Image 1: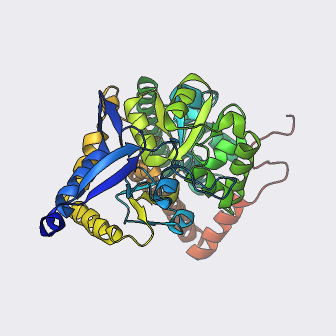
Image 2 (image 1 turned 180 degrees about the horizontal axis):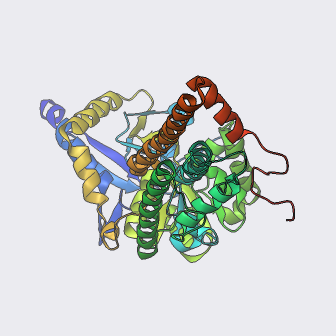
Length: 446
């Protein structure tokens, strides 16, 4: 009896075949969960016997009220532990006990790259810049044209006699001049005053740098073939009709959308529930086959999808991840092994062993086969260019004001008037629309 008390306890462990957590190599099982289980057994000094779950499921409540899958085997005490990618949920926690998570995950969307990019090339010419950058370019264009228009009206070198002389730099002509610079084409009229030339020069510098950045980023986009995904979020997935989507039947992912109060999540659940015989799959292997062979998007655990995308270079995971969760080791309710295993998992995380196992089983070469990952150019990358343009515009307007002030001062000395009154008259003449004159430069005969 004393010798038996010192023998390591043998635990029955249930798991499920899923790459890379548990896979078969000949007659042996190996994978992330097997390596994790081996490390825990050495720390806590127990033996184990691994069996595959009989019905091939993770665990959900059946129509009869009984639990299926690995959760059911723990509840019925057919197994002591469940070491698998088993998500910790409140419903499962009511009937079994979980350790602290050994892997953090969420819910993502797995797509085939060519299926995801269908119809994405219609406005592909806008892809090199982000929406914020395009907005900044439009604001810069309008602001530059406005400053050029103001400088042309203020500067006496550009408009000497506002009472009798026509100003060629109307706002419409200013817009046309700015657009001509954007296409590297000259557009008349050309500025004569120093202030106008300063604004024109800094705008030319801005447009040349902008076009160089656009061409470089567009070339990188074409070479990488990494077009922006039209399906970035779950909302995008719901709005489109070209790609079907689903998840593993009776999984925690399906229950997440069923219980969620988010309107988008409810729409996803209703879609999958109405078409459950067609869009729900039995396991991840079937899900990968459907994604690769048809227009199908698989909703599942993001960490498992990262592995699938690493092993199948034609697959990609959409950026959005919802429902942060974790994988835990399951034990019977009230089992003393729950606390022991939780402490051991924490120690493995602190020692870096969990990171080592993650890198070992999630290794990929897909990301090194092509060029570097491409992304739209953000405004921050061109912040200095926008700053130079702003400073140039401010300098141009200030020079125009200086030119007008200098003329007003000489006129005041000649006419024996105060400088302020002459400057006020000049401003009144230059910004007052004469009868029949259009600010936009559209003549009456047009």
